[in-house]
Length: 169
Image (cartoon, rainbow, N blue to C red; front, side, top):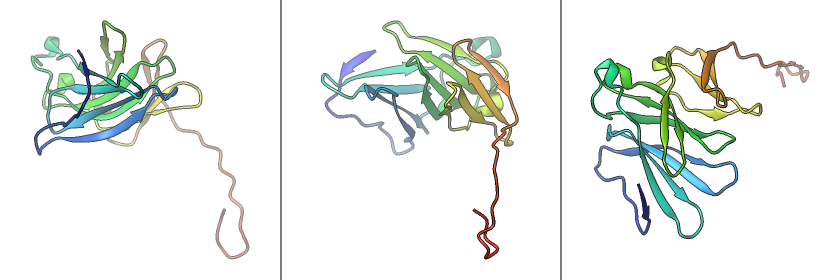
């Protein structure tokens, strides 16, 4: 739903925002809350009319999760303007990575096999993938155009050089 923003409060002392994400073109800001367990993600236009849109992650009723009780851990825009979020929950079927297609009629995709990525921050790579790390330290990435998830080893070429004082740069 969309409303005109004049003031905004997450409400309740148990709630706190986890990450603020600026869309790549600077036109929108998005954030989620941890502590409310309501599955809500907020997005606001950064210029007039400063419209606030609220998205609510759906429950996974096929896995006996009948309420949207997710807490938002991480959030990231992809190159097309869709939002990706990581969410934790008391219901295992609601945990994991979600895509929110931020259109006038939003749609939601929960990526299968990502429950261990429920507490990760997300980051857009220079290749257009969304990077994540699971609760045990395994790297993974989302391919946003195909909505697929893969685990991967992180390969960062590093060259160490001594500065002559037993320090490496």
